[in-house]
Image 1 (cartoon, one colour):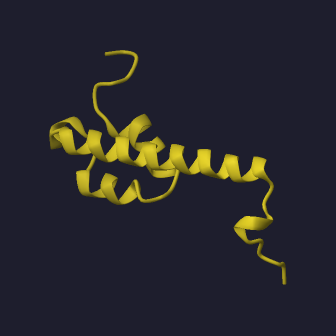
Image 2: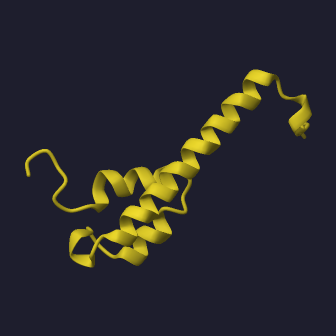
Length: 77
């Protein structure tokens, strides 16, 4: 069984990378929820509730929402 490292065992560089990655992840999620809340159901592909649940999936949910969940924001509009 592998030893789980505690925070103090990580190098300063790894700590900084984890903090930055966490900030980006939280920012994406907050931006996704704000955008979803401000849009009408007609402006969202599928269910707003489903996208809200999907955005709980770390990186994948918010990125998928911004890529596929919003209507009329493609390059051909």
